[in-house]
Image (tube, rainbow, N blue to C red):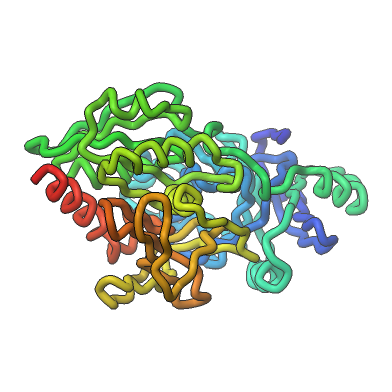
Length: 380
């Protein structure tokens, strides 16, 4: 990615998809070029949390909500230390942000972090195209004198694909750090960082859990060196088919029957650890309004998603695995994609979405309580 951070208001830009379709607009954020996988996010709010979610590493995010940047940028809402998206696509950016916590504009923040974006795009047409054709490689190019689109298309087609990408170690912490329990400490959890969001250990800390966040490269010895009451596997980017080390690590935890909880990428890791396959979704689930049914309670939750891969497990039967019986615990009501797994013979479960839900909704917050209950049961 090459960028400049000069004024971009009138700088021409073009978005080029790998199937040859293009959209013209104006530069938004940094000026230059960038590549990634084109995906769309359906959330009408929470754009700052989306931008800083490490699961979006190497993806160009198209916002379906037409007005973006209205509330500016603050220093309280980021989910990590930087913006992770490779590029950003909006229809109608706010000219002036209006929010009491805003300290700078979204345009300025994108430019300062070197994130190339494009505005003035018909994001409705672009989203419909991605729904029909599927997520695909894309490039955003901005500047006064751009090459012809045939040259730009060739650049896009030379960019790496998301399928087969091993990315979690690129976004994870390099050193272990501790998030202390809020109030009285009740449990210790070892959290494997595959692209963890800041709100996730905070949700556990609210429940009296001291969270030791470990690198994606952590060994089984590293995990048990903290004497955990439970082990957590986080969300993260990339193709779960490449995540052999996290799978082996999770299998080591399952062998010891320590309470285990995984979200998003962690759900896919559990699927692989139990012997199920994974596959790439046509265009994935992204946004904060995805309906999921908890088959344990029968309740329907509105949930926050960010995944382009899913677990291939049977929906309507209990499966035998090396670690006991397993079943699908949650399912997406839009397309019947597996949204959760649980073991019936030991304390382990996972969901495919983000129950920490920054910036919302909070229907799935109970899953952290379910994790606490497993640790209480194990201790008893």
